[in-house]
Length: 531
Image (cartoon, rainbow, N blue to C red):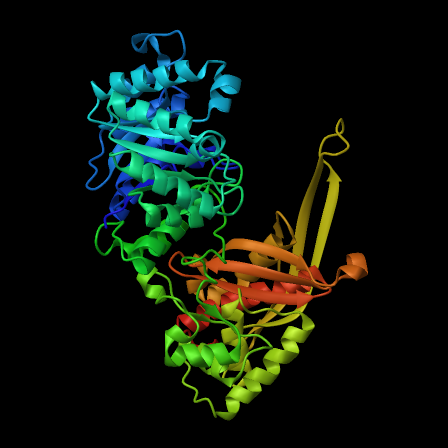
């Protein structure tokens, strides 16, 4: 069965806390979603803010190949003719081929939120839908608070749907606006509605009870043919149904068609790209598309997955554009080490003596606080060192960092300024030198001083830059004397890699991670150490 995916990331998604998209961002996401093959893209609420007004003006210039653009708005206000209603007129000005009108389907909401009678509410719904249907090709009616209204008064909730259909609605959408409905309640309500109305049904769920995805899938099983939601589940309060989980569930588990053929493999890319655009860190444990979704840490799991992914994976990761990851830790067995070495192009048989050396060294380091799950570049270097295959590209002889903190504003005691100065005594082959540099902070100063020397010997490092720097306290009981773990993410513009350092001195831990980041780049590029 064809299930229409209605994406509301650009409207409902931006109502989520911390989610902010510019007009340019919204246009980029529109093209991304169209390429994915969703059926509808809800661009926003025209008339509610200048950004959405500008978006609808500019999006008209885009050529969408798959998706139908929709504008969102409310039924007319009580006591106002449709010709004079700002919301309806703004939707018409947007020029979209489809509009989505929401109206109250819970009598409690009509009386308490709108201050009108149940009968007046029915009139608003039918009149607004009829007015828009005579002017727009497709009208979708979102029955706001439908499931709460249905529990309170089934007949009134159904009468709201009938009013919208009488007005000419092409589809009606059952909304769990407060997000507290349970799956069995969704199933029962959808089945009753499906037997009552003759137009296609949709579902719109929120995640306040952690049920949005389950409720959306259950609604499809009960008879709806449209699912509304957002990418990565962003949205007001606890968010909306996460389409990144809904879509593969419908396609891979239930055999329905949601996207253009072959586009399911772009799901991971789309999820991560939209996280990046909205300045949100991707959820590593997110089902289907997270980095941890197909990551295996236990040796038994890794060994089994290597033989057949079905042993510990519910789908083939490539189906959604993801991949297997074999993690290494003190829980790892020889099979995990063998698989990890293979990822880095190191050919080791499971019974190779080097595997035992790597495993022993790994367990010692993890006991000290190292963690290589986000620092696979450091793990690659550790494997080489444990096997005696690594020649250092440079050697640290001494490192001194001074940080001076002073008052930046004499009138503001909280306004401070600081400078950092790093002095490094370093050896590169037979060359030994002392280099010094200032920076915005200790790590920046160390990096700049280090680069002054080694960039001359290894010019390929000029393209390497810091993407992220994280510090975690490992032994909080020691207060400021605690052991810390520093994780650095670096990039050369093409690849990204993570490195780690651990020490009770944050400068030393930072040096370890920084040095590994540069050495990994050199190893990756096959650079011969300077002698």
